[in-house]
Image (cartoon, rainbow, N blue to C red):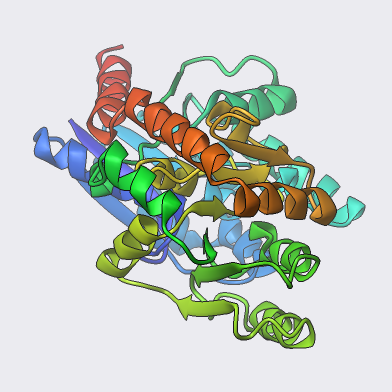
Length: 360
């Protein structure tokens, strides 16, 4: 079986969605399934829409010698019209890997309506779907109705294994000193770092530290805003922006932190929450999106409404003052991590699904 995969840019791009795609490509190739990558150029959303009228892209896809064509849903602006033409010319089925929908993010009303229309057109032309969560499946069903042939294959958090024992996690929680918070995500508005900084500014007098890991170059204007926000709140001594970090550095930060806080506006799943749980880190996340499929509020983390800075600050304050509660939540986080499917399990689910499509 030969499988094509349409992505933007490089498969090595640092994000949860690209990590998922990399894991799938690696698994397929290990199982002797050939994977042909088709990389479309990154650009602004408006320019990506013009790809639908590109003879080069159309003929590139039409001439692909594959049995199934996977498309990362991130590529929807480039393909929402082109796919309809393509389906009439090829025999291979089109399958979309859906991480989350752009129209579920927080945009001005008119923009969201336009994104919703584009994504609806794109999704309606699919022959099958790979979803990263039940929540993502439901958001697609809300747009197009019956999703037809599909598989829900959760991302995993075991790329670092589970290197810390319960004893080590408990000793870490009882160490004197500040509550060590960790934010992992590219510095873009959707990830909500500005919300976290605003919340922490309300408890600036308490003993905490925040490490921020994520690409600062994705949105330079947002990164500039974050730096200004930190300075204005007099938090430069408490917050460290590490920029993009190696896996070894990130693993060390996971191992030495107490709490993961990523209050995103929306997450289709949230791999970092699960990775943190592998190190015994309770997670604070938003109620919007699929984080609730991982986080049981008050047990292994907290769920807050988007932009609820006061509530977020209160949850952090509880763990600063009560290390016994931190230990209980850390143990619950570790238990949740251990109960979750591995990357191998989830990628095999997708492989089996693709093989069943090929056999039809």
